[in-house]
Image (cartoon, rainbow, N blue to C red):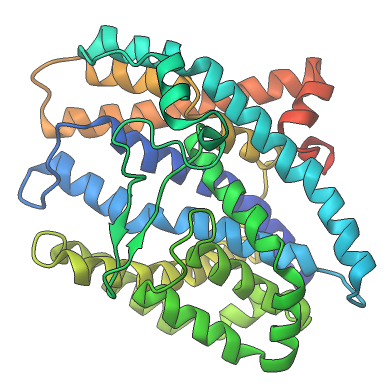
Length: 381
């Protein structure tokens, strides 16, 4: 049995990355079913989507934030302005450059995406020039608000309007929010050193009740999970070893939540959202425990090709590919709930594999392009 906790921790991160990327694809695939009124009484497909996309998959991006926070401070012997400056310079390559390029790709692909939707589903076409003129070119890189103009805002418990928009390439909101939170890493480091778990507990409460600054790109989700991950590396703790201490209660709460939370969907949407935010925390711990245990017992192992492609899959899946595949999946008429479920699964798997093999092709034949598109991540073995 492998007892090297550092190696187990690293392999756990590598194993979960492609899994979480696939979960993000599932989250976005449901968006194509614009005519569905999701309900637990709506049949097999509705129940499947509510369980998968409304309860289970929301853990994906918080997990990425957690990993990012942990890796940002990992191995630091000291902290000063010079170290912070060098890390910011590095983030230009790993975050800013891919962010700009993928949003440009999405902007170029936008007419093709909308044309495919217009042909297959009879949707009205959007004129890209008019969209740029109405919304502003730079805004498309931060909060596009292309279709409804309301920035997908929602009202929190205090009645504040919280913007929840995405950039042109929808998944890149994660990179956008990550770029914002890393600007505050000196403050995060200082607060963790001074207060430790108290600071994390405060952020956890703010995340659960959804109270934060109403600024697009500066989210409590990014701040809390990034900081929670940072806590372990700053304090020099192995998070997989720490999480194993609560493996039993986290497993019990996970299965209880998985059974009970979907019931709230039709009954009380406020309580449902509150429960899901709590469940995300439990789920994150549960998945890290599950994967690290399986790796330690040598039941699973990391596939390097999937580990290396996960960022590319995450960034690329909504650019043409997801649209084309999901529209085709939805074309057959008079689908039963089981058929729709199987087609949904098939569509998301196809999207993942297309993106994965695109990356493998680029990595082999155009490694410099792969490096730019992934922020140099293809050089990390």
